[in-house]
Length: 253
Length: 387
Image (tube, rainbow over all chains, first blue to last red):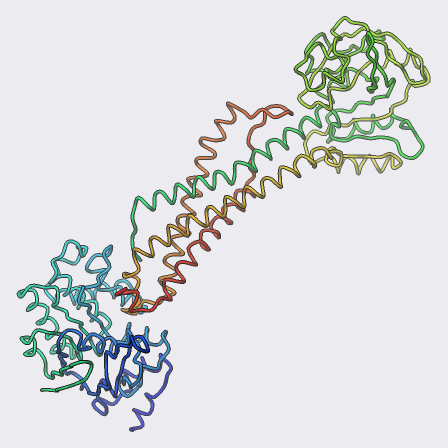
């Protein structure tokens, strides 16, 4: 392990966040999953959603996780996105095992280094599109002016500038999901996770959303991992893995 | 952080307003009753200061000197001396013991409000006559509705003759020249004859006084006046009306217990109301809160948002409650005062009580919101988002 990587081995969240600046690029994979398992329940009703899954995502890659319903795709994404804790195994973000961090540190990582896009958009219904986008930035301590500027920039990039002042109820599904993507990007995350981002959308909207994800990966360099059951979405990914009954069965570039 | 349902918000604020107005109502009623009692006490029984003799002295040495000193004091409005002249009154076949007090009508009229409380006849003059003024609690006046009727002489009216047993044992017949009645029943059981009459009937009491009453220009000046009089006449007993108001303390003590219980109940209601509103809001927003936590918003920020909402509910409710209290309740009671045994009572609230109750309500609202919020933000993240 390089001295710089050794610097990163710390459970202090501020150190984890600050490492963004001191990290040596490409020394370690951006995200490394090692023997990750997740079991729900116990005894006879235990459900083994993930079984010792291992793989890596390099910086700048766009990973597609595919598999049938119930294969563990969303469970895997939630472990990677720090929404849940694995039963065993490790999730290394730039060499740091983030699975063992305490919740306050994980929250900080979710806010400042990761982005998450939900299948159901998950926008706050009483806030406008612009407010939904800049809320995480506001929580990170940026000024309202800076937050608004960043939100406008992202909405413009995703061709939603004219919808900025509308609440989610006034947006189409595809527009809502693109707002959700903008929100996930507002704090300049290193990794973005998208769980079935087009699951509730029609074909045209799906295409727009996937292109938005691809643009953020390509133009902003955001490492991306998304779950999809649509084979057509493989073309957006630089790497594809397949899950079946909680196990990694295939990896493809 | 998030806006809410307007209807629920409005209802919660109205509830807080009503609770705050209710928190003010009972104490202000008690305060009004207390003020009423204290006012009656000073106007008819104790004045501002009561001066009496100490030790084995039955009468005050040099009462004229004391009166002159008191009247010279810049804080004194008036002063009067009284002398107990008799202790039993009879009429027809009824007899009972009541104090018969010899007064100087002129100075008594400026120190007490008794002469303005006549319900029949007129008050005394300074001349030596055989007139006597009776309180309704002595005369009765055939007023069977009066609470003191049973113990009174019952059938005495203005113009009737009553027999008074004077100090020393002799009796004298007086004509009732006037009957007075106040709202304080204690004050209605006195009889008055003029000083001139008493001096004529009891020459040994000439120039003597069993009590001197001093009326200050303003409430709160009593102790200052007492200190100055004590310097010249240290061997007398000086009591302000506050120290004499044992009856008031008994009444207000009971009222304060009732007030404390009612306030506690109101505050529990307020806490439960805020708890329920917050809980329902949190149940409806459980998923939203889960998403907020998922995208990195801290539990403390979410909690603070809900506590702030509770503070706003309370603050707006307090403002509305104050408006309701001062704009509706007080004017209403002023026009239709409550009738207590001591007379009509209106509401009286102090700034200190209002501030205290407002602060307590805010704190109660915060605690009412804290528990459900704390529990919600501690829920497992995945359960919060996906149930």
